Length: 311
Ligand code: FO1
Image (cartoon, rainbow, N blue to C red; front, side):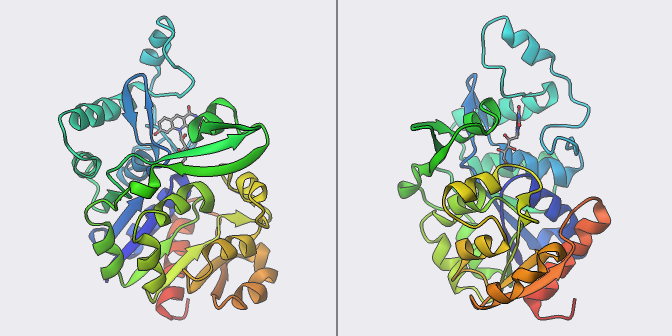
């Protein structure tokens, strides 16, 4: 069985930690959002790719959900002396990844090639592919001004009134090698509990991706909204700002026509009939991923729902 996952950062990475417990990791392809990528102090940072690889390698700082466990920030502190950008917290060990990526990209390698080298270096068996090798940048319009997604999320701590979200460069971006094949050959496509606006929409906006997902038989999404809010990140704020109901029903509206199955949390079970009216079969379970057992149970539940097996 082959599985393709459309991935953002922490929610997707935690889900993948469970999925590798229930299927052969080498049968999974993670197609990862790169709209959050940022060039900072001359370094190319791909947060969602690193978050996915660090989680699967077991080196992530689980509490933060990003960066490397036990990392120190001596270089960042020293950067302040030179008035370099220190608001985006790159740890000392994490920096090695960004130096490697930047070095390889400057040598002319594509992001997908560098990502393949990174996942091998970390001993990760899941295939990890960026959504595109082209530069796509998620921008957020806050109080009348367009800013980089990381500025909005980290520097501005999601403050201000959001008036729009856009993906600069997406019109010209081509899927990275392996993306279309993974989607077309997948027995199941999974959209883990990632931010539908800034993590999944950029992937779906790459040429050909949305059509390939819409054509697939077994596409299952896990709602990242539980009890009217997100577990992590600004999905709830952004959904509300763009006029979507902050509920699994709002998530289903974003994915309407693309998904055939949806997993929602038991606290939201009352939304099931409305979602089923959109031709989406709903499965209700606990979606909070506290430990490996709950990650594994959620991954197995989503997979069984899509395969028509009794959960
Ligand atoms: N998130 C933060 O909230 N603050 C940070 O300083 C920060 C640094 C950072 C460094 C490397 C990396 O790979 C991720 C980092 N993140 C940080 C997470 C990141 O901003 C977002 O969580 C993702 O872009 C959304 O998935």
